[in-house]
Length: 144
Image (cartoon, rainbow, N blue to C red; front, side, top):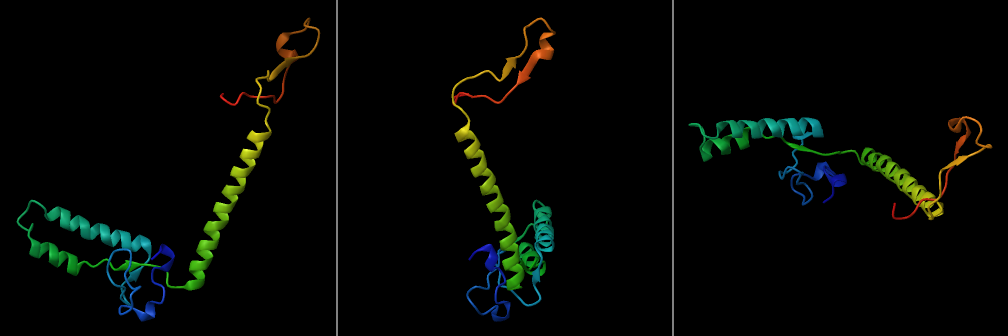
């Protein structure tokens, strides 16, 4: 199961095989949340269990009761078209990054590979040396 499949065909849950969410529990009709709400609810449940460690409440019965009572639910995207749009936007960003990487490879491939000076001096040398310096793009050794 992939992230894009979470909560797909929610009307078949909890009987169908694909109804287990990322938290490991079955999807329930009233137990689906967005990721931000789900992560906060999970954090609060785990914080309560951690706070009980080393106290009189540190029993298996209490931990089981917290696990049962503070069910954070599951998260997923129920709408197929919204899921498809989110994947498309993600892939557009990745393809743009791929094109930029290919352009960089092309620049590095076409840059001369011998060491050359990037600074040249124009003029007869009688003027101020800083005013006669010109910069240009030149070769660069591969090992540099």
